[in-house]
Image (cartoon, rainbow, N blue to C red; front, side, top):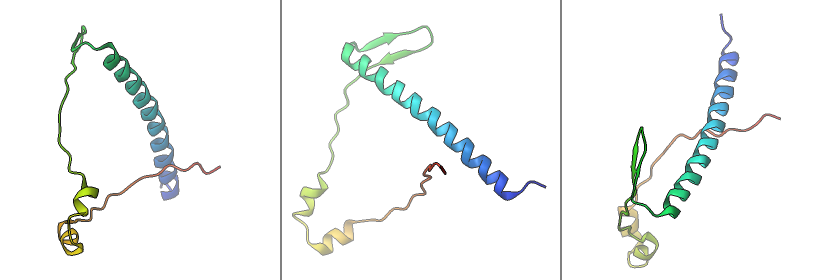
Length: 93
């Protein structure tokens, strides 16, 4: 029978290893994205994929400014609380 702590240790080690790999890939992706944007082309044709670079305009509500015009009751009514579960990696050493 497998000890529950052994399984938990395996989860922790596997999660931390994959997260480290993902962080390296995210950094590489960010660097490549910066190079693509600096190059300025709108279309890149590869043998396996094409990249289309486009500007997307969006409007975002400035909630800090909006709060200045709302009463505390209005803010409370329009606010919502969300919950999420987070996993944080901490080295035991």
